[in-house]
Image (cartoon, rainbow, N blue to C red; front, side, top):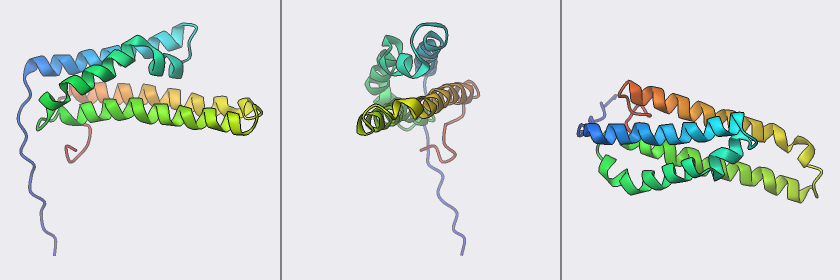
Length: 140
């Protein structure tokens, strides 16, 4: 028996919160560009650059205002991008430590993957925001 799931009611977010979410994506994108054209790496600039750190703090500050709207998924997407990226980088650094530095010879491969993943997450999220779509099909 196939029972349809109830549609989760959502409130339409205000235009200022939508603009605010664009600003957060712009801060993350600025960190990525800094990593691409500057002396830092994409991963380093994203995780330690002031624009991304400010963006994550702003995500937490405004997250309650986004609850119940389709923007809630964007806030979750942005927060998870930062913290999962930090987790992946930590695993890479742990690998280098456990292998007494020998892992440094191959640790750049997964770090490059994390950098590409950051770019993908910011671009995909910002495009969905532009189309006024939630990040997840179920809105969660």
